[in-house]
Amino acid sequence: MKLLIQKAISSVAHHRFLWAGILLFFLYLTLNRLTDAFFLFDDYYHLDAASHIDVQTLFFKKSTNVFRPTAFALWRAQFALGGWTHPWVYLLSSATMHGVSTLLLYRVGKNLGLDTRTASISSIFFLLSPWSSEVVAWASGQMDLDAALLGLLATFFATAAFRAQSRGAECNAHALCAASFCLALCAKEAAFAVPLLIPCILAPNVIRERSPRFFRLVGVFAIGLAVYVALRVRIIGVFKSEYGSYGELMSQADLFHNLRRYVSAYVFGLPFDQRTSPWNTAFRIAAGVLLLANGLRAARPRAVGLALAFLVSLLPVLWVETSAYTTQPGRFRYIPGLFVCLLFGNGFSALQDAFEKLTGNLRALVWIFPVASAIAMARSLAFQQSVWSLSSRMAKQAIEQFEPLLGTNTPVFIPNLAYGFSMGVHGLKPYAFRMYFRGRNPPPVSAKTLGLRAASHPSPDQRFFGDMKKGWLA
Image 1: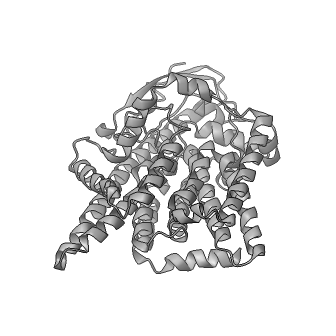
Image 2: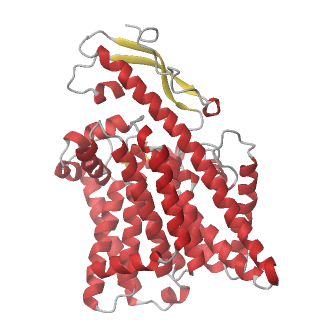
Image 3: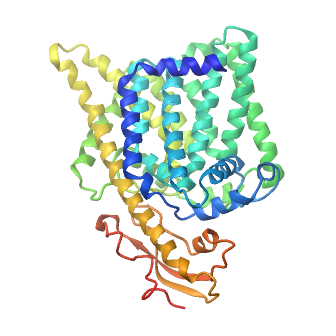
């Protein structure tokens, strides 16, 4: 285990560009978001549940309206550190998990035979991806972060087992792989798609030759899946969720319409204060070129596998509609985004090979496409984080305004509770006050919710959540 970790660290230590991107990302979060962090929307339900349910109950008894014990166990650990008083703990945890997932994506890509430039470009795109905004900025988005991180960890152990020098090392890697995959599924069902990285990147001849090691890996993942299914069936059933059965959800959805919307969300538009932002135009052109480059002969075999894996990864979320210009549901795009970023990197690698035929400085022109895409992503991510910061400050203000009403037992009506922003950034639900002030005798709350336009960027001093003197109606 120690040797595996040392190899993973040493393999990325000399890639200064990747490390610089991660450092800037963490600096940005530290300077602009940690002090503004606060709880939004479903955070209050999830953290309230995680804070008083023990881990054994989470995994073996029905204790919440979903079966995602890994996510609740990690929230419980964070609650022990930060509680309700240090919300920055959850944001820092999310940022750390996203950073570690970026490194794992790079390492897994290298293990599976990707060249350095493909793995590096793919990882940097994933780090800056605009669909990561929701899962990093919102504590409840950690379900998808947990699932992706543990799924990538399972894939990392699987590739280590595939290349192990001894049977003992292979068995140890198999055990860690099965455990990681089961825990990933227990964080969110969408994790089942992450190991598809292995067959869609590994050289086709490995599968054609019927390598025993490859089929042993299939068995290991099957064991992890079987354990997860056994736990889930015992508690809530395989295809049931808080929204209904999977079959009912899929039958009621316009699947082709939703598929088109998901594809467009990755390629044709990023969340900005204006849809006509020139950076959106730059991103569409650059991302389109990188994706079309997957049609080049050198990229085609791997691109087919990645594209199929991307489509499969959409199956758990295809019943939910999305939009290219919003952050919601960004968490549903997070795991499929792994394959999209690898397609970007795969296209760039093939495009760079094609540009090798040019002479002189013309070869450097190929870098216009990934650089333009990365800058557009970073600018969109910065805008999104500014709106998340605003919503967090407003939510904190609402909680502070409500505190003097504790112990009054007089029903409270809020006529202007901000439910969220039109671009998808979340606000508050009426039950937030009851759960945040649990044990302090909060009065019952009802509210009329409203949505805000992100482009308006109201001052945090404007009391969109109600004013104690003018907005609260008893």
